Image (cartoon, rainbow, N blue to C red):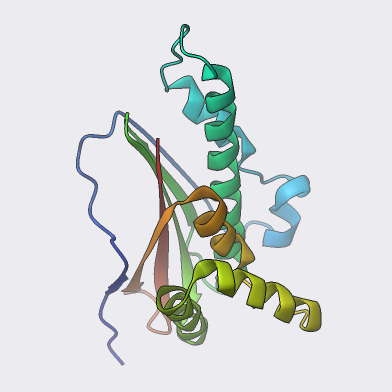
Length: 196
C-alpha cells in the first residue's frame, strides 16, 4: 500500500534566514528508550542554555535576564515534550533515528523532532491532531487531564503538546512521510515555532 506525504498545519520549509542550526539524533535500538529518557540519561534541558547563548542580551533593557530565562525554559520544555511525544509513538522495531532539529533567528526558534511510527500509531496521532485543530486546545487539555485520571495509557494524553500550545503560544505543525525501507512505517516530524 502506497502512502503519500501529508502535511498538517503550517509546515513551511525553512526560509534560509536562520542564523544558527543544531541537529541531534540518536538510535532507539542502541538501548531501550525508557532507559535513556529524562533522569536516565536523555534530557533536552541543555538546549535551552544553547539557544540563549546565541540570542543578544541587551544590557540596558529592563527585565533582559528574566526574558532570557523565559526563553531558556520555553525551549527546554518544548524540546523535552516533543521528544517525549516522539518516543511514545516511536516504533521500536526499526532503526529510524529520533532526531531534533533546531533553527534560530532573531524572530523565532523552530524545533522539529522526527521519528518512525507505525501506520496504526500514525492514525491515532492524526486523530489527536484533528481534535486539536477542530477544537480549543485549552478545552482539550482539560478533557485529556480528566481522561488521564481514568485511563493509564501513556500514549493517550499528548498533554505536553497541548501545554506547548496553551502555555507557550507555539505554532505546531506535522509532516507524515512514507519510509522507503519499511512499508508499514511512516516518519512523522512534529514542528513547534516559538516567536521571540
